[in-house]
Length: 360
Image (cartoon, rainbow, N blue to C red; front, top):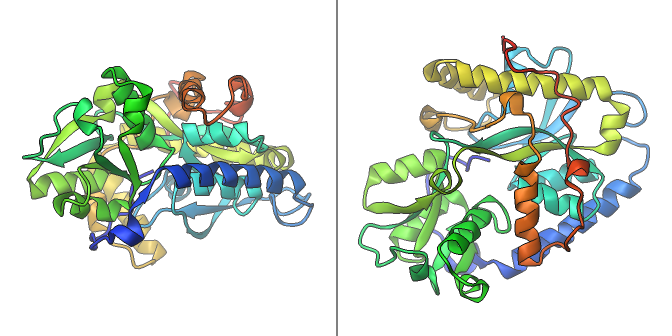
């Protein structure tokens, strides 16, 4: 998802820079805990408010951002379904873990993280794509203008900072290194560091890292500041593709099929509305949404919004949007070969939006 748009603060190497090994293991442990928690959840309020169907969906947002579900709600596309904001998430993996354990009713993350969750046998399903990469929305891997780093091989021994390890940006980095001919051992010598997006530009300029992954608002502002150049970017690497999905717990879907259909279809309509509506109109609506919810958020960065980047019409999920990252995780040794069946991870059955339909 988009990074939190706020003014960068000075990062501390000891407090904000962390290497990839521990967070990757931590996420796999969280995925296992989420699977256990969801599987053993009782019949209380944990998943969908008990055995009775619900019309209210609890969720986590992103500060300064209007996610597709919030846009759908504001447009009236969720009909009688209501959203209940419980706070902001810190990352996609944390968001879908919360959905698996029943702390929220839907969560979104990079599809590789969704595959990891499925490999841990968490009883959840991806129901709609909600963000992706296109010519308007992408992440770039930036270095200082005078940096000697000009190729994949130059990255060996260098520090690359991204918002979450084991997710979207690390997948892009691994894909780039592999395509440029680096061996697995060589690629492992590229140091991956977790760093909040609001700190990444400043860390690059101070020489604390050699490469910064910058996307959306933070990328555009950093480019405006000058003095940096892109080594490569997501869209250049793989073209347009849906990169992340909303997931819902199997138990919630079973108890609330109509609510789930209304929600997923409403999000699909909102994605198409955003795609077909003039950008200024979309941005103006987003600004009104953020101001109305009154959470002391800066609305100015929303002026940089260009696209949600979703490839499929109405956010419909294509199998290769998950299988690509299942293969990547197997290559890394994060999941065992054959651990997940792609057709079991996702469903388009709750999405009533069809090509040619009017989003309005």
